[in-house]
Length: 243
Image (cartoon, rainbow, N blue to C red; front, side, top):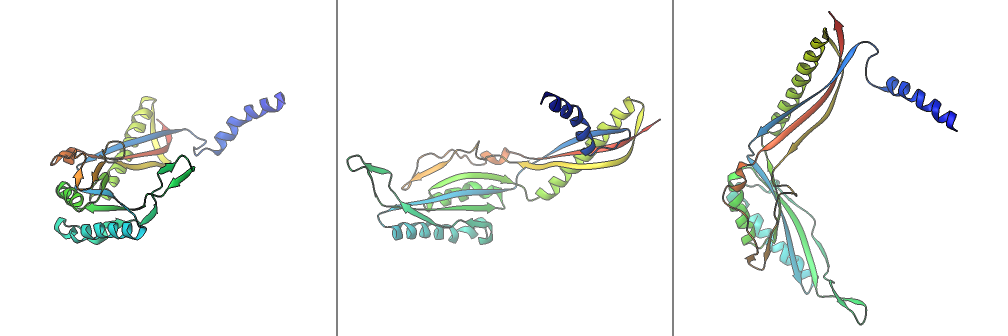
């Protein structure tokens, strides 16, 4: 058994090299990275609507009424119905109470819930729109995702920056060893991603009980100073030419 393991370890580097995407001749592998920062000009606000009633139908109707009030006020904030995503409505027993003597749950009524995502194409209206949503008894603001209307363009800029970064670093390294870059052998894009402010880790949930807001951490324009970071990474392999 030891002999078999030893033979496998000796040959595994050869197998790895044979399967790798590098040429057999002189070459250099390089990773290029780039970031592009931008100010957000859009936002997607996520809400949750919750209703507690004695009857399931009443809870459903209450949620429907609140959502309809929200939809009726969209035009004031430049929001189209196509910019709204509403999940299916769910209802279930509110059986959080428990009878210790009988060992059974106590049905205290019914809960209806629905989640909404609203995209505002003018970030200046986010604060006012949230105030309006809370005024029509939308219970919770669960997330604010900052966005850019130029996302595709900015992602392309980040990718181009990563390409240029890889070429510059590879050229400098090759020159330091008395060589020059030859033809490109392979290209592999690692990732293209964007990071936005006020995600799940940084946003504090606003909860409404009845008509009273338990906490309102917003200040006018507070989140307008946040930025969006577009990141790109690319791996490339070049042939090397000796001077």
